[in-house]
Length: 157
Image (cartoon, rainbow, N blue to C red; front, side, top):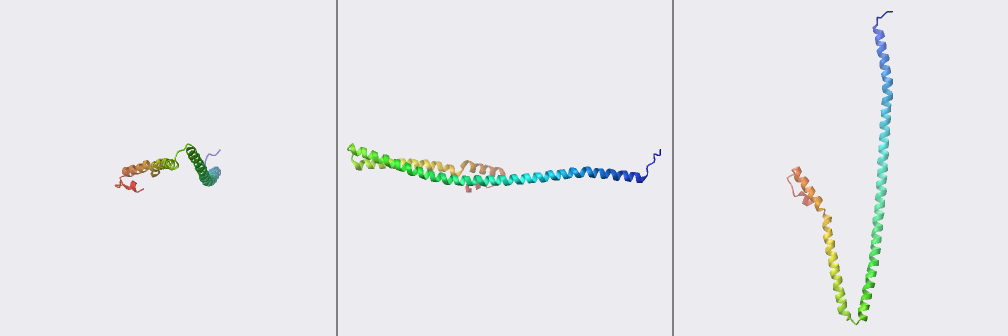
């Protein structure tokens, strides 16, 4: 048996090996491309679904806020009505006990003014939280750490 190999045999063998590699690489590349397309499609679908969810929740939040405002006004009206009835009953009862009308009205009016003032002060104290003092302080510290040189820019926020 001859063991000599000609260049034609070598070239033919190399061509056959290259063709076999192409057939093995092509399905792998097609699989990767298919997986990438599927992933992109799934990511797009998820983004659309998340957007739809966020819009639905925003709409629900807006409707809830409007309904909460309406219910708060309704509750306030009933509370004011109840307060008025209680005050009318108290005045009627004190009149039945022969308490003079004008001094009684001045005392009740003064108590209402004190209660309103205390409630107003409480609301003013709570409004301090609306300025986000801790967050502003963090911004100032971040700016100081960055070396911006303008440590008072946080006061302008």
